[in-house]
Length: 315
View (tube, rainbow, N blue to C red):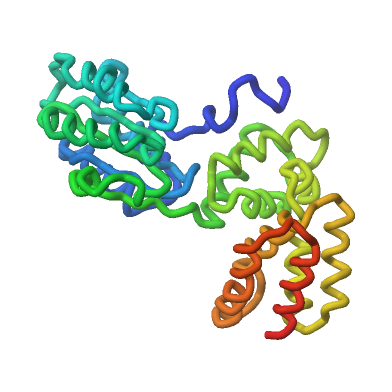
């Protein structure tokens, strides 16, 4: 069978139980306590994409509702169904549906990307949450909780998910590669961790994209397949700048430019690599301070990259 399966690996290896979820140990412990007590409040799940927010609540719902899951859970992507009519029709109808669930468990409404909803929809949702709180729990997943109106935030217990740690993500990549008989270098696993920035979904999709390659996956192939500059060249350039070797850093940057990456691509990777270089916390803070103005005023020019490098050389 081909390495690239018909089913996306991100779905194939999606956790089904809370015990299978990687990372965010404290939050998973809280969800397990909800499972064991068979009671939980409305929830607001916050954090960047791909770190387990929606998966976690589905695992909780499966463990609570078991064979009643399909009829007792309504999931909507609020970025698509974001208007007031969705609240008044789809969600209201579901909340009013009569279901007798074991242990007086509530029905569950999952609103993914809830920060995309309109103001009118939020106001309608607020009222719906009040009316049906005895029989239905609402779980809102979002990337930017500040966009959720305060009356809804105050009705929810907020759980903030963090990006996955390097070891957590790399171990999972290795496990999936082993299951799929993918031959991958350790440096390529590290490259996938850099590419994904703590986003497990992105890491798994990137691994599957690379798995079509015949033979052993290398770090160079990871960066090429994901259309990103090589982290090795960028890290080396930063380290040379910190040693005040501008000419040496320029050579490393030109290697990246020759592959067709523009100033914005290189600038983004430089900033991402600040956390990967061997430097003190004081130096890292200074690097971010220096880079901030360059990120605000972008002109998509390599001259900006050279200007940032020159600033770093002045530390």
